[in-house]
Amino acid sequence: MTETAICIDNITRDFEMVRAVNGLSLEVPLGIIFGFLGPNGAGKTTTINLLLGLLEPTSGRAEVLGFDTRTQANEVRTHSGALLEHPGLYEQLSAEDNLEFYGRIWHMPMNERRDRIKELLTHIGVYFLVMYFLGSDL
Image (cartoon, rainbow, N blue to C red):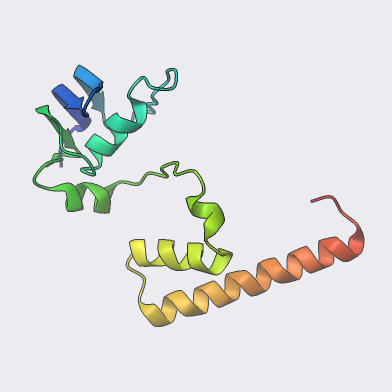
């Protein structure tokens, strides 16, 4: 495996009327905690989507954990994780649907996934029921 977690070389992403990322180059070594900070519209989410291989760059290239984001996007997503903000997505799913979704992402076998979902929901249901009867504000 590589010693570099993220390597971005002059990556650009254009949408119809907007250049969301403009010639970004960046190298992040393994073992470093790194975050994107900036105002809305600065290109943070677009850059993450490029790094996960969910978007194709207009130009430039990027690697995550040694995997090319254009040609090895599945490997990138298998070896990394991201919780992307999609307004309303998680709120529209039930707790069971959310757990099912993440169980599938982690390739849990169906029987194991169903058992674990039942276990978690039963445990959480009992917890909330107890807290309700105790009058706690959670």
